[in-house]
Image 1: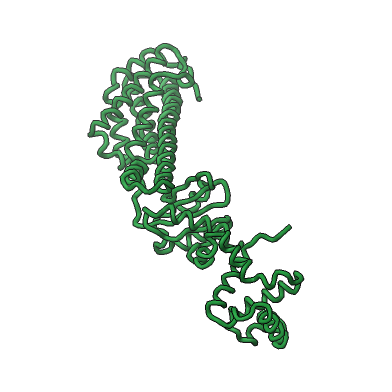
Image 2 (image 1 turned 120 degrees about the horizontal axis):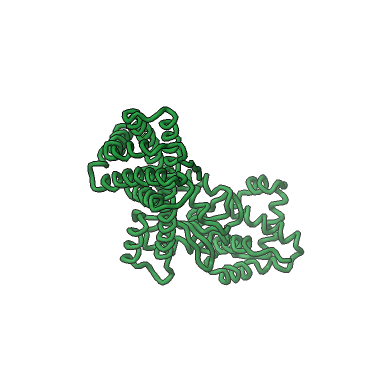
Length: 392
């Protein structure tokens, strides 16, 4: 912190300024009021009285230090903590740090002008007046540091508490024991989070959901449990929201659950986690609503494996290469509704090759290829088989 030793200020200079303390404080306040519209009405309120007392206390402390021959700046005092508290009050009043700094600059300039006028009227020499100016600027710099420190201190404390309250809210929304409306509503009020009509939950593969939340906006909650981290997106279907979410999450392995009422947040998370687990890798983020058939099929993985094993059992004993070719052909045959030219085009083979493979499949699978139920189960079996881990 800057320092200045008041060796060149004669006692009459200090006495002259002290005798004009009240008019000097008035001039500082009027200068701030005139230069900062934000503070125009403040000084007429009880809040303004605290600021005025702070100004007067600062002037007295400055004069006392100089009179005792102490260094101005560089030492801790009650005035320093007072101005930190005033900085805290400014944050709590909702005024910006830039407004606070601008007001402070106006006040320091007014303090210098007022002190110089007092010194001139008292016949103080020019060198002494210059020394007085230097001391005021050093002291003002110290007070400015104190007031900003206080502002940032409480801002940091509030930000930390706000984040803790939002984590508690997220935990209440995703409580596996069930949704308690009163608990959620109270947690949302404390976290200053307007309850939306609906939301979606994002299952995140990484370990820093808060960083992802910051990419989106201030209304996105983050949290984690034993199964991993997640985000809560309020009003996920609002205009422009999907595009913004896609941009923010484009490089992160994650899956977005369906949009649900807030009481069903845990369901959105469950489906998001299932989508993250079973949907093959691709463009992020994965959206559960785009893969509902796969989620329905694979929400019971053991049952899905049993279906795949039972319906595709006739192919299991074939050599791996032949099995893969027939499986690929069967999938294309089902997708293109048995239209041989389209199947051949997709597989890049001759139509006669397709006919040969289909005949082979009929030998192995029998009548399951000729009924609606049979084809439906074969398609489910192929989808389930495609999600099985590769051996080895």
